[in-house]
Length: 212
Image (tube, rainbow, N blue to C red):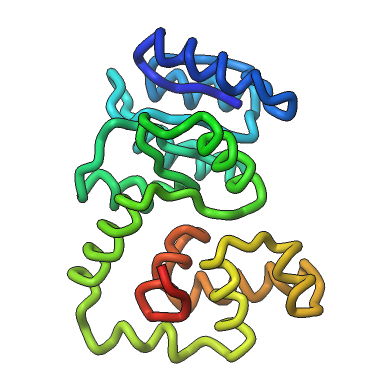
């Protein structure tokens, strides 16, 4: 775990909470976005807990760089911000999670394990606002082309992604290999013009494949 937040007390509190779980280890702390990029390059953490508003390079730009250079590194935004545009920018940056800083410690730890399994971790407020924004931005007839281009199997995989299932779980439920699941996911992302599982899950919820 890497913690990126410009408030030392918050970093200290997060470290204390995370290290209560024997499966988690904090390998570094930093107070700005460029520092988060530099430490990710040096330490290769599995997960970065990222604040949005930090001096210099902000968390969203840092997320874009980290996701581009280290696609296997998961990023969870932990912030007090809940503005619609910032939530959309978080999703576009490739982050796996968006939580508010009033999250309970147990929920934070659960979210970390979820993103490590490939599941999105979104605060309900963020999910609702994302759905509203997607409805506004994509209220056009051509939006159905993406969902209509999916095969039945791809729709099944997309539904399970939206339900928070990992690749291994999807493979087990559909009696296919994990490699086949990954191939389906690649096709889904391309057809829906999304970049990650979180965006795909929001799309599936919006199209009614699963209920929120």
